[in-house]
Length: 331
Ligand code: PMV
Image 1 (cartoon, helix red, strand yellow):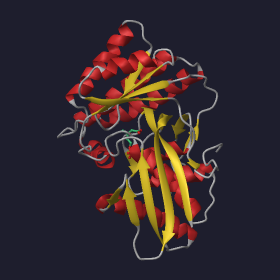
Image 2 (image 1 turned 180 degrees about the vertical axis):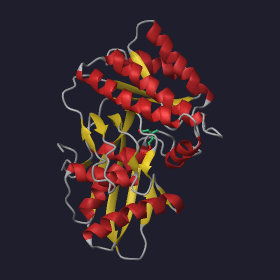
Image 3 (image 1 turned 90 degrees about the horizontal axis):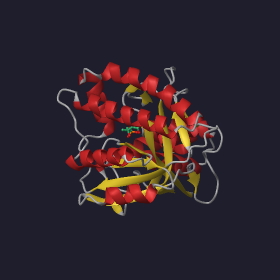
């Protein structure tokens, strides 16, 4: 049996940084994101004979830690399906992997949807979100389109740590994603989260910030208040990075030109352009703006010689099987 699925990356406006339970990959707090149409991962899963899984990652054979992580994730599905068959997984993305551009979100969301179908399982979108979370915390959100909230949950088994779509907002965001020329990111987010929890004097303050930011961001969405949402998202992003930098020793995801890009976005705002930024665990900057200002924002970011390309994106839809079925509609 072979199944193909695609999922879009999401970018958190209120970020997930810190685990409640590392084994179950439950987050310490909730988070809030928007799914982006232009950042797509497509994955096929085919059941094969043999005693090991095989991974082809952006055209090259995947091995080592990437393959282990995928195999451990498939083990969860094999256990559920009572089917021990191995799989050949072929995956590719329209954007750089493992560089802090949320490839694990779209990657594990697409893998969850394709492998469930390949192993003959049918779950509700909420159950798919819970499963995707085991691969990557942010993948739980990429099961859904639009604006998405992730619940931290309280249960020890992780069954209440899932994402769901936020209904009733009319805010239209457009993204200009500034991709810097850079190598693979140096510290994986999962490792850096644990490092921060153990070693940053600001970790508890960060968790308290998230609680407040979630409430304010949801309220801004309800009122379709672009500038309030931007204020919360920028503050939340900088608080996360400050917490990570303050760990001893600190971790830096920015490259020098990231600061240039932050400054550029703020200068645009001073002259009246509606725009705000956020940055995940990597150097790239995502600017959010309106449809009318997208061209101006993208052109401003393209001025910098270290920026490889600026990807323009609208808000994206849910993870889906490529032969048609939607996995992320409703909850
Ligand atoms: O899903 P993970 O384990 O790669 O962690 C994602 C961490 C951030 O992208 C920095 C924040 C987020 O909420 O997506």
